[in-house]
Every structure is written in C-alpha cells, then in structure tokens.
Amino acid sequence: MTRQISFSKLEQDLRARLREKVSAAESTEDVKKFFAQTVGELLQKVLGDNVDLRYEDIRFNPREKGAYVISERLQKMKGFASVWRESDLPHIIKRMAEFALKRHEHLERHRDKTEAKMYPVPGKATQRSSGHGVESRDRRQR
Image (tube, rainbow, N blue to C red):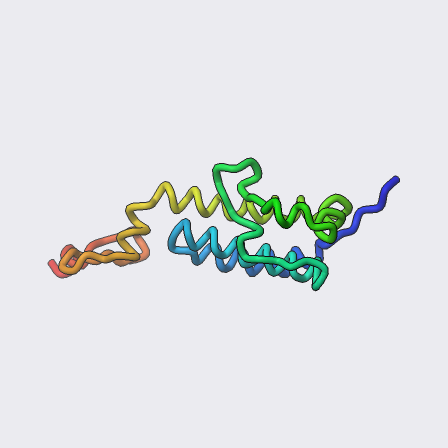
C-alpha cells in the first residue's frame, strides 16, 4: 500500500481565503486572477524552493476538464511531478477550481448586472436594495 502525503491543513486556510476573494469578485477575470493567486500560494507552500513557480503555471479555465490548466513546464519539473503523484494536491486544486467555476458561471449568467455595476451610465437611475427587492431612485422619490 502506498502512502499519500496530505496537504489538507493548508487547504483549509487557503480555501477560506479563496472563498472570500472569489465571492467578492466583480468579473470573471477577477475569478481567474484570484484562483491563480491562491493556487500559486498553495503550490509555493507545498513545493517551497524546490520549484521555480511562475504566475502562468496554473490557470483557471472553465472550458478545460477540471476547470484549470497546469503548464507543461511545471508538470515536467521533478519536484512538482512527484508531489503531484504522491499527494492529495490534485484533489485540493480540483475542489478550489470547482468553487471558482460556480462563481464564474454565476457572473457569466449575470454579465449585464456585473457590467452595470462596473461601468455605470451617468444619468441612468441607480438601483438600491431596500430589503424587499430592488427599486430605482426615481420610484422612491414619488
């Protein structure tokens, strides 16, 4: 029976940060950036100085199987390959990608709302939550 290295303690800490960042993401690009940063931080803690890690080595890509891509450069590195095979790292990154994918899909479905928040049109009625739904400023003033 082979023994597997576990990084679940690191996952707990970083998953909470990823959740916080991704939940606050205003665009799909934010989701991609936060995922790459968080997984990069995880890999840095796991691999230390054994691997020359670059930002582009891990990318969130909702069109890929698993919703992420690991660069060939990183996959070929001896220090990375052995840890990848002998640990729960693939499962941890998969769970992180699944969470990021849900937020990405939500932002994609509501792209018009996201863009309206990010790029408000001057003179257009602003919307504010009143606790019972959304009402425009014009309606409240009547």
